Length: 386
Image (tube, rainbow, N blue to C red):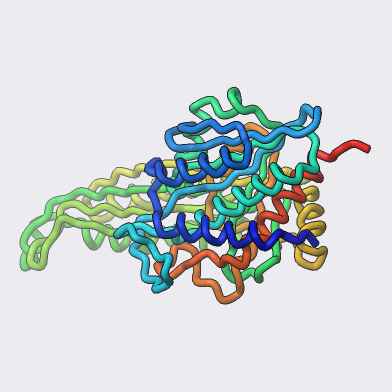
């Protein structure tokens, strides 16, 4: 197992808590990006800022090797009001690091410092600090800003903390590991009116309720039970009031899948249900369907390399193959459309609050394990020749 210097571990805790106290939403990570860039320059890396808006790329070279590996961390926070009581709680009203990106950033900075100090690899490492992961735009923005052309790499790796998984444990799997996310909006339109005289119009609330209930049959009755699929209605908004029947209703939500064919079938069935239900109730329906995140597909060979690196760094009993894909989504998948790579989950503790919860806090005890994994992976993928 890799042992991390206590001084580095202490510094990472300070970095992480500073970042936690000053969270920034996607594409607003100016303080965070400046903090990251300053640390990387202190370590002696070549640094480029403003990639895809607020992204940062640091490059570290050792030896004469020509291969390049990229390590990625996300930097953005969420629009959630923190309910934590710890001293480093968010100082920004309505914004907090409820997903642990502060920890991801601190771990990658720690890996950069250790590798800059100790080396032990032959080639180049790109440290990619990405904005706006939470709403699925940051990776696309960096790619659109010429990331691959300006800072090319042969493969890319990333990690995410995982509540419920023990500290020091790591899981991943080959192939699909995280789902696509599709967003939908169904707008029903009719004729509203007085609540005492529903027969005079074609109000939409009953039709909207029927639509919401019927959408649940897409997964339960219209998809192969062996397939992964989720359809969740998250909002129902009308223009009615206490004594007025609404003439317009909006149904919003998201759908998850790990195969494009299932995403297409969910959309097809949703349109059939919405349009058919609308006709039955004498109203009209319009369906908007957008694909925000694509499935995250790990390269099988690099997954084995990642597990081997985790076994080296954390111990063989702490590196495991995940049993099934998660239905959460990650825009790290956008990088994998260009180069092979692997995404892993690192334990945040069995007692951790859930991700996106207002009481969530990244577990500082996980920081050294993340650094150990990053460093072991770089040294395995860019070995120094004898």
